[in-house]
Length: 86
Image (cartoon, rainbow, N blue to C red; front, side, top):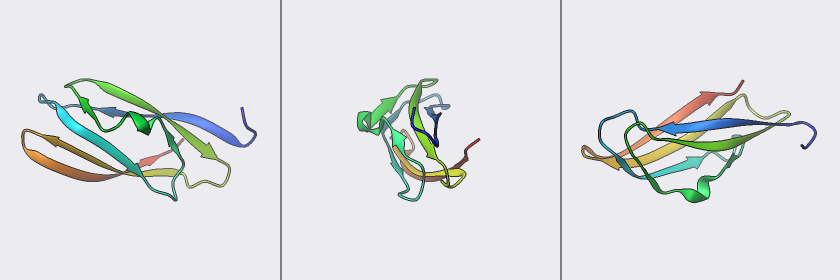
């Protein structure tokens, strides 16, 4: 463990009945780091969960900002997410 650094989890879950393909995440350079993104792009089946480690340092912003991209039966999608870090 590194002094002043906490670790947490961020999960991507497919909550719709069809798969999401080519799921990719771009985290903001001003946000805490996400570890494990090298497995992306990946496909998510309905109900499937993918976990990523978040590193949170002292003085980091209390939110994680990320852009998520995926495709499904309805087409291509891109959505920004801001998640509070506790």
